[in-house]
Length: 197
Ligand SMILES: [Fe+2]
Ligand SMILES: [Fe+2]
Image (cartoon, rainbow, N blue to C red; front, top):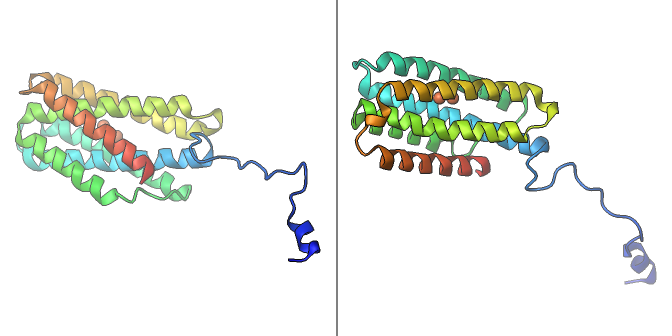
């Protein structure tokens, strides 16, 4: 190595690489917002499938109309996040096929335990999702007014789904606490994974 090249590679005192707009782990900024849209789209995908699974089993039961109402709203939520994924060039969750299958299996499986178990599942899922959306609303900056509006509106819908499920006997499901805690744990794990993968 020549003396000249040694001089060239020496660090110039006082210069530092510019700090990127966002760092890994930052919750705000484009990367953080992309992560939010990814997990929300995955969640709405799973939610739509939960109701499809429940309807596959309970389509002739009195609660079918309630399930159809909720399913229609989940489809609208999913369509909105699908649009945001495209508009903002966000990579969808690589586990999308898993969320589809897991959602349908949770829906059909809970419905096979009965209408009240299906409703108990809805209460548990919606309580976790409502909290998840509230957390995002707390994190989003004022520059994200459109996304905030979407999430706030959907959060209200999820709270209505929870209330509808409570009105339809969710808490009378057999082993309500165990079912509820299991579904909540599964939903939290799914959120954690979908934010990352
Ligand atoms: Fe939803
Ligand atoms: Fe919902």
